[in-house]
Image (cartoon, rainbow over all chains, first blue to last red; front, top):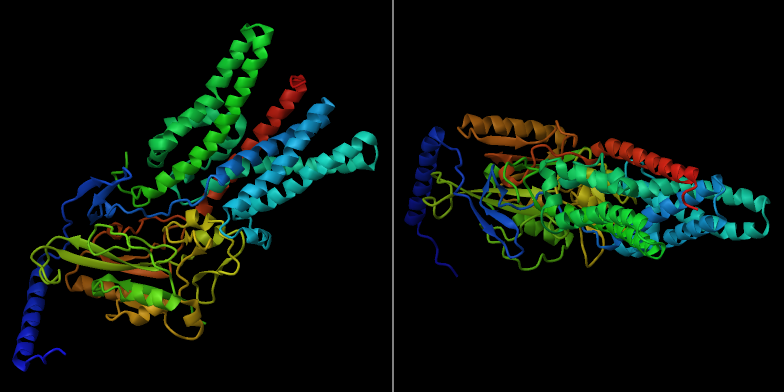
Length: 325
Length: 260
């Protein structure tokens, strides 16, 4: 048990407290402004620069304002597979309209159908509670790209699978009711496929992460395969603060590599194939195609990774001048 | 039911972390793990799935009467952070399952029995509050003590606060008393006090205001938080253009018969 405090020492303490308060009040009116302590920077183990000290110039000890994206590798993979199968469905639909080679249409349809099965599997794998995937279909929210995307994916997967299966029946009975059904589901899957190939840019763009929302008006186009390289280059030329995350470290290199793989490299290979003999031509064109596909996949992964780097940097949300290099 | 809010008056905060403890106790939150952050007395770091109240410790220059046992060395500022319960909440708008709802008290609440852990709310919160619990799978954040409020009680943190630094009440009255307190402090010579309540931004006001000394950025309070739905228009226009280009490209390819 603590000894009881003597009455006189207690009075002395109270007296001292009063003095401190008076002193504070007198001096405080002259200058009460908090001067920040000297700011030092140190490097953490992960190589991230953390500013020691809290002030209006550094934020709170360099701690991030935002949370890192918690998506795993399945998500960029889903963006890629979903985008590809969406495009495949479009090719099948347009091919059908222009009565292209039946084998090409059949391949495109099956690509779309298989992609439409793999995509939800990838998406579900990233969910914290996979068994609750169907909760995505409780509501439809136009203001949530995740909700729009989930409904689009469900519509696409079903119509793409239906198109592929119906297409097989149609071969046996051309110009029957099956043809009408095939065409109907083909149209649905092509339209939803278009959304599927492009909405992922909105999905990651319309977030609080600066590296992404600063590029929201170019991201969906960037994701749409054809314009990837041009957009990637134009983003690198822009120098807004959020762009730093795109240039720095791993995501920057991935972005550059992806740009090279999806643009100049296939172009060079294709040009080369024009000059070589017929035997080499096929190989070169195949290499060009593989390079494009790899570049497209890498681009999606790099954008997801850049979000993590950007979320760690408190300088953009706090409007600070200094930031990570 | 009246719409409620928190007012955090940092000038009254003593950094005791009673709010953090009360929050953990009441909501039965798991441990954050033993991480030594290396700055001041803050080993919590930031809000997260298992931390719904977080006391920030800001060490400043010498101010007489401030600084605990060694006022000759430095001064201390404390502020307890919490979910802001935005008027236009990024997490609520983005939630694809409808798990995140607005309660009758104006708070933003994640229904744990609906959330499927898609983690989209994590990247759409402009204050970095929501986080997915990897072990559990779902996203968690401050519930504004929805259960307590339903029973007519104050949130656990406000109840536990020994200095009434965390005030809780009807939002209009609280905003009024925040402004009165601000005027009083400025009158007393605290010329550097600020009320953090970003009503001008797209977030459209919050249900947790903060009175802090110095620049609110010191406490990682962003000057212009934006709800990510403001980027949607641009994004969908771009998606439309992208889709149009894809369609045009495909039509062009077949028109030429080049894919045969």
